[in-house]
Length: 237
Image (cartoon, rainbow, N blue to C red; front, side, top):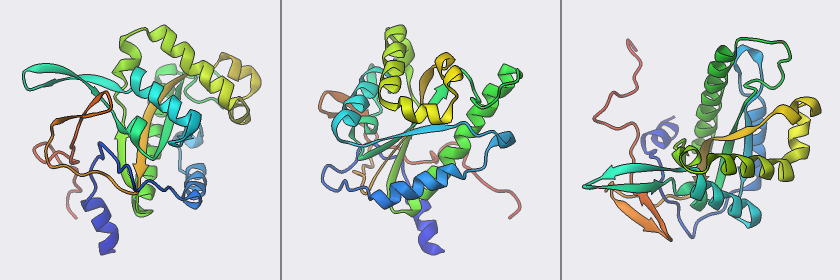
């Protein structure tokens, strides 16, 4: 029990992963696939879609596109505004990307309140993120979660949206067709959701400073939860 607790106590949001120790075991990916298939859902409606992207070939090219075009924000660091990239989206050994859709629950045919469905979809995504993070940590991986996609919406949104959906349809049409009926798939479009990045070893830092990897600025450190802010807690235990 102490070992399991230490995994959580020592957890931090990895901002850069090791360039040497990068092996992700295939049996761990198969295990995660099975876990994700059995995660509890809101209102017994299963919809959350995840794509695994490796650090090789076209997966890595797509991840670089995601970093360049989606996963960045602007931060006021010191006396200047800096474009901060969520570096592990490109640099981590492995990535699980959640897909958001215009149809929050793709296996519902009858009309329902769109706002309610949207809120349930976000809640569902959060349930999955929690389970996946826990399992990755217990499998011995370091992790980082990133949902900052200001870049996706800030510049040339329409062209990014078109490329993202074209890429999914060209590379994952068979898999998506197994989840969504053909008629509904034609009306469905996707947006990038939360990215869960992971690998065997992070590059720790105790300074929250801007560093550079290739041409990308990234912040080197984030302990979680931030100690100066409200911490997670259970009352009366």
